[in-house]
Amino acid sequence: MESHQPKLLLIGFDGLDYELYKQFRDSDCMLLPSLAPIPITGPSWTSIYTGDSMATHGVRDVYGFEFRRRYSHNDFIHLARWYIHNFGLMLRRKPPLKRWATCQTTGSTHIWRTLSDAGFSLKTIAMPISCPAAEINGTMISGFPIVDRKQWFYPPSIADNIPADYKELADMVHWFSDPERDKHSYWGDCLREMGVEAARPRIIETTDRLLEFFTSLPAADVEMIQFSFIDRMGHGFDMAGEVMEFCYARVNALVRKLTEAREPGSTVIVSDHGFQGDDHTDYGVLALAGEIADRVHIPEGYTPSVLDIAPTLAGFLGTEHPCEGNNLTVESNYVTRNDESEAQEKEQMKEHLRNLGYL
Image 1 (spheres, rainbow, N blue to C red):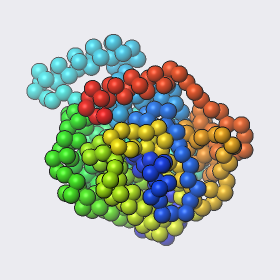
Image 2: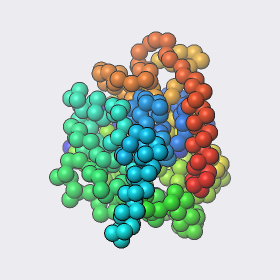
Image 3: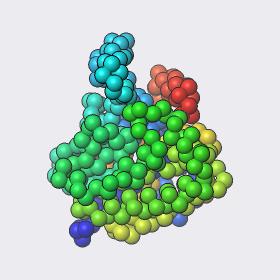
C-alpha cells in the first residue's frame, strides 16, 4: 500500500441509526442526524451519492430494482416487455432474471464522477448501488447488488487482486443469495436459520477482511468503504438487545481501525437510514471529524439530509457538485424540502416491501 494519506475518508454503514450511534459511539466527532426522505437502501444511497431526490435520480426500489428503465419509460410497456423477455429466457431454458437499475440508468451525477473530473484520485469499495463500476481516476469495486452481467470493478487490471469471495465480504446478502434470482426475503430466512451466534464471528471475519483488502489497495485522495451488517442483522433478528450492542461495538472497532490505518485529514461517517427494532427509521448519521467538521455550518433549526452529503464533500474539496442538496460548508439559508407526494410514495414503497417480506 502507498504511504499517501487521504484528504477524505468516508465510512458508510447501512442502517446506522442516529439515536443509537449517539448512545454507543466512542469516537470524538461532530455527530448530526441525516434525514432520509425515503429511508430505503436503493433510493437513499443514491441520494447520498448524487445529492438528488428519488424523483430526480429515479432509483425507486430497495436495491435499485429496475422498474421502468430498461424497456420503456412507460411502466405498463416496460413490464409487458420485461415479461416477454423473461418468457423467451424460459423457452431457452434459462432462468428469468430480475433487472437491477443500479447506478447506470440514473440521469443524476455521482459524487465520484464530479471528484474524478476535478482531478482527485478515488478509491471506493463495497458502496451499495454502485454497479456497474464507473471509469474513475482510481479504483472502484462495487457493492451490493453485485451483478455479474455488469462490469462491477474498475480498472479491469485489478481483477486478479480481488478476493475470490469478495461478494461475501461486501454484503451479508451474498452469503446466501443471488440478487437476480432470489426473493428479497430469502437471505433473511437463511440468516435466521443460521442464528445470531453463528453470524457474529462471520461478520467479524468478513468485515476485517474487507477492511484489510481496502487498505491493501493503492491510496487515493478520497477513499470510501461501506459495511451493511447493521441493516442485515436488524432484518434478521431485530436491532435491539445483544444484537444491537454487538453491531455498534463492531462499528466502533471498524471506525477506529480504519482511521488508525489511513490517518485521513478528514473523516465522514454516513448512513442511508436508521434502524431500530424491526424497521428502518428516518434518521441516519452524518458524523464529521478533522478539518471538514470545522468547515460545516448548520443553521439553527435545520436538519441535514442525505441530499446534502455529496455537495458538502465536493464543497469541502473545493469543487462544485450539481444537485438539489445543500453544500453545508457554505453559510447560507439552506433549502428545506417537505414534499407531500414523496411522503406518500414512501408509505407506498414500505407497503410494497412488506408484501415482499423485506420489512
